[in-house]
Length: 337
Image (cartoon, rainbow, N blue to C red; front, side, top):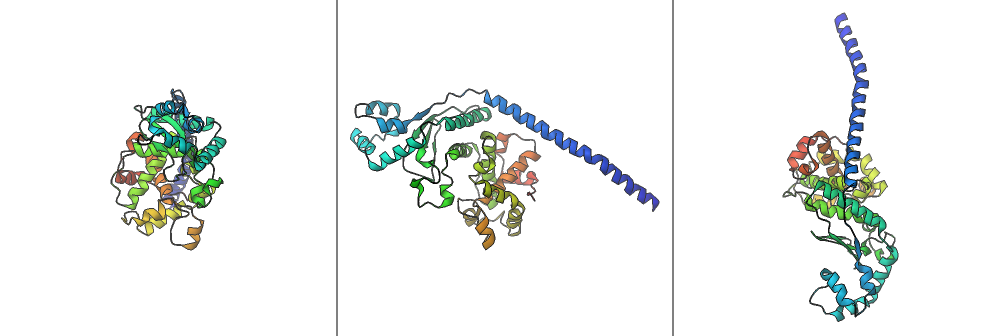
């Protein structure tokens, strides 16, 4: 018995000695990680990007019949060939078009802030994907389209400014609050980053709810890397309150997914409950549903992918090609308590 007591005492002493060492190690790893990130960001900031935001919205609003052919030559992709000049001049004088032009130009006298954020996005894309070529970036004053808010091709980015006038704008009257809150100027670069995330992320055939979670988590982790200057709530198009709710209830959300055996479920309705834009997530529990933000599946998928990157030696680009099984099995994900 005395030997057992001595062993226990020795074990307690060893634990007390190891504890500060453990915390010192964690502190060292944290500092090392921050220094590495700072060094990476410093390298990215040096990348030269030749970016000019071309204001087609202003040019079209001011064009004269005499100068229209020149404008068409500068922006040929903005003019469908089946329509003659009279069509475009009539459209320029249309009451709705004039209102769109006036409101976008009033809101965006310049796009200095947006241009700096887009330039930073492009610098990050160039760093991680050296083959990336800076596209032309063109602004337009077109009808509000909250589903396809930006248009991206290999060579051109079109920014419809009427999609980013701020949720209180009268253009958005009648829209549900969860839709209108996504129409803020600071989300322009977030939507642009999301388009590029879908372009560069391998999308395997998605069969299960877990497939959806991991794919959406990849897209959000992509934003972590290419728009680190945006907050976590902005990357998810949440308000700060919504993001805090997701954090505070992360363990409950995860337990619900596991207990209800949703992860390997193939029911397509799960996407509408937890992935697709909506005013709230659908747990079918009145109190929880009324308090929750929508798209909580994306938040959980994001945390799984983050855990995978923290617990494995793998590059950002390699992660984008990994399967659901590889990421989930090796993430060692533990929800925030």
